[in-house]
Structures are given as C-alpha cells and as structure tokens.
Image (cartoon, rainbow, N blue to C red; front, side, top):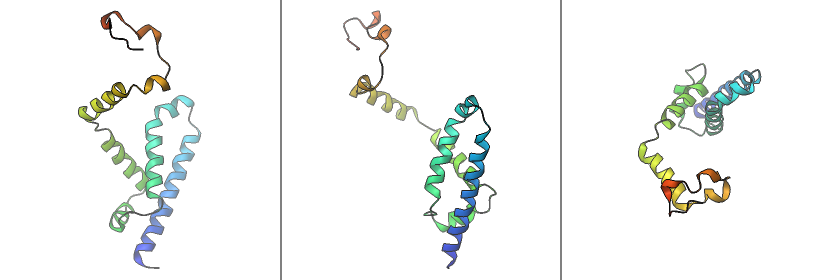
Length: 125
C-alpha cells in the first residue's frame, strides 16, 4: 500500500468515526433541538458524503488528519462559506421565483395576499 492509499484509508476511518459520533450525539436530542441544528446536520451529512471516499487531494487529507475531528473542521468552514450569500445571489433567487412563477403550482397560495389593494390591476394569483 503506497502513502496516498494509506492516507486515504486513515482519513476515511477517522471521518467515519467522527460521523458516527456526531449521529450518536444527535440521538438524545429533542425535536426542537434537532430543528435548531438542521442546517448543521445537513452540512455535516453533505461534507461527510463528499469526503468519505477520500477522493480529495492527499495533501489536504494529510493536513486534515492532524485534527481530532476533521469532519467538524470542514463542516464549519463549509457553513462559513455558504453563509456568505451575496445580495446579488439572493436577488437572483427571488427574481427566478417571481419570473418563472412555477412556485404557484408547487406551493399552497394564501388567498388573503393574492390581490392586495396596493396591487390593483396586477393579478398575482
């Protein structure tokens, strides 16, 4: 087994253990606590899925092996990066929803807001 294969195997073993420990920690939480942690739970699962096969750069894996919980390190950075949605990105998301109007078929409408007074003449629903 060469050095790269060994590094990948060690890394996989470590993040598998990190993931199992994380799931076990979630087991004792209430529904409310789980809902509060939903973003972190989803990010943990996504990062784990991306890393579990060790298909990353070996230098990165070697660096991450230095940490007790590399899954947590990568997850927290992932959340940091994802939290930086620019106003332009959000504007695009909102424009896309309003422009395509596909949400009207997929989500229940609130009749109270379908034709408010300020939008007279513009049929919203």
